[in-house]
Picture 1 (cartoon, rainbow, N blue to C red):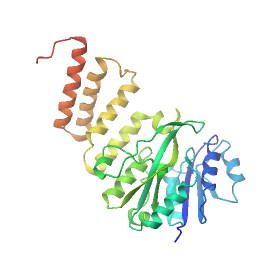
Picture 2: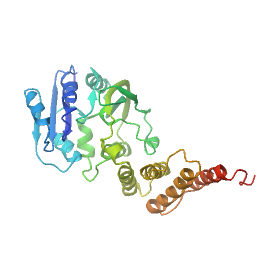
Picture 3: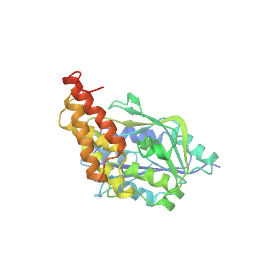
Picture 4: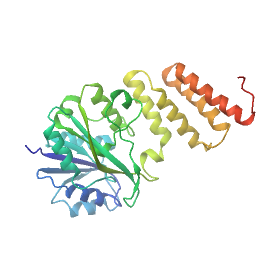
Length: 298
């Protein structure tokens, strides 16, 4: 039995990309496809583009409280058995929405299906493959290996777990996958390249890396009371990158990243794990060894 599909696109001033996004949805060979675009009040060419397609999609342009609010409007309104969320600068590859829907139709126990994806540039050319991995909830706490536009979930997921956390601006998708996984949702991997996730200088993640990592740390602290060491290390690297300390600096980078990681652990976890202490000691020793060869006692 074919499942109906709803795709939700949150939008704000992405006129240079949104037509490619829209076309990638409307070209999908899905018989019962509902497409909803919730725009936050764009002032560029976005609305003119949406008007050209309004016979095939539903769109609203009004002030909102951010991306999560826009997606949640769609989650509360959509009627499809299967739900996808595609940002206004990302794209689906041909036939992949149908492939995801068919997978869920043939695997009734699965709540969520996710595929592989590519990072793409402003011309849709592939930069690199997104580092997608097989499902492992413990591993997900260390690495967000699900590419958001390549994820589809059943309506029952929203009914059971609710909508996105509107207090989040950078890791709203990551928090949702963790919430679902911790709550017992069944994830399955579709081994096909489903979507292109656009990567360019103005994207939220690249443009605000320290804020992005700070929000992830706050999210973990609120959710579980502890931030995994890997995210603390990632935060430290982002801080040093923002401060212009090159990763090739033989002394400054390893010593500074060790110190910043330890300060981050104290800030969010109130303690430094034994594993972090061992690793940061190695970094510090390597840093001093680079300027004072032979200083480390064997």
